[in-house]
Image (spheres, rainbow, N blue to C red):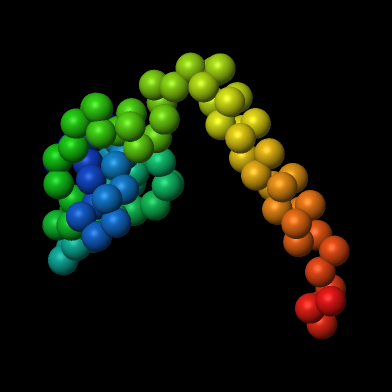
Length: 91
């Protein structure tokens, strides 16, 4: 694996583009762009650009992203309407 490759962390399924690689003797670490975290290269496998787009939403249009935000807002308003008056003692 090298900088610029698409990679998937096998433990969580996180997909990103490798931004940096560090070799620290016994371990080699790769920085993924989506989390800004380093992952053990031994736990990464090759991924495809399609997986990256699907996971990150990089292929969504502005309208699609706005629609998702509207849906989230509606869900939050509905939740607050139903449960917003509950106090710590449950009343």
